[in-house]
Image (cartoon, rainbow, N blue to C red; front, side, top):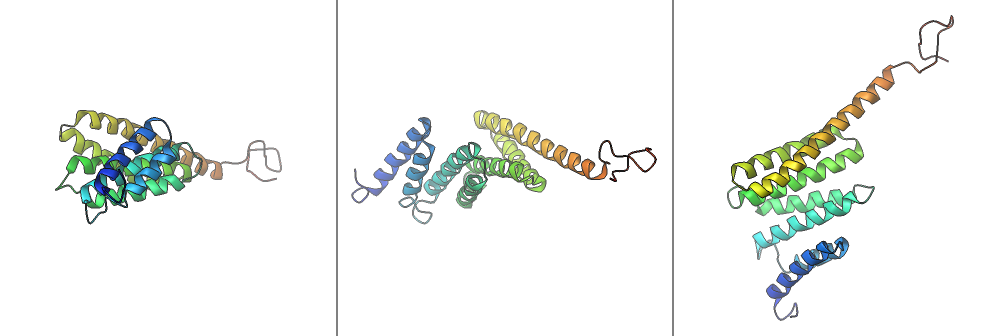
Length: 191
């Protein structure tokens, strides 16, 4: 099946190829397959398929980002999830929307943790919480359970960031250890 002769069938096969590559741990190749599919499943021509591929792309980029030290893949994941959310509206597909919202929230939390950005992490945590509530209330127990695990991870990350900030602030205001004033009295942090 060629892309030119049967673009919809070709795109469907490539989506399956991307899923298979993901299962084999070939994430970069899976990303490439999904990006090719987006050339066929456009937002204008097949909005919900396009949104699903964008969501899957976001998941892949999130997975790759976890294995890297920077934030570039997390940034790309956020973009992909936000694209998916343009078509995954509350009115059309509330549970799919919640899944994309949860993915975007997790990407934000992971990126925030690497950057030390508490407000970004808190924003992501809020998104994950809202997504979890939608899934739970919508009766999607399996996806709600997965989102709940992400919610716990996000809460832990926010707590770590808050602790890091509290420790950082304390270090700025605490005198250096072993430093004493002119008479050997209390520590004052002066050489």
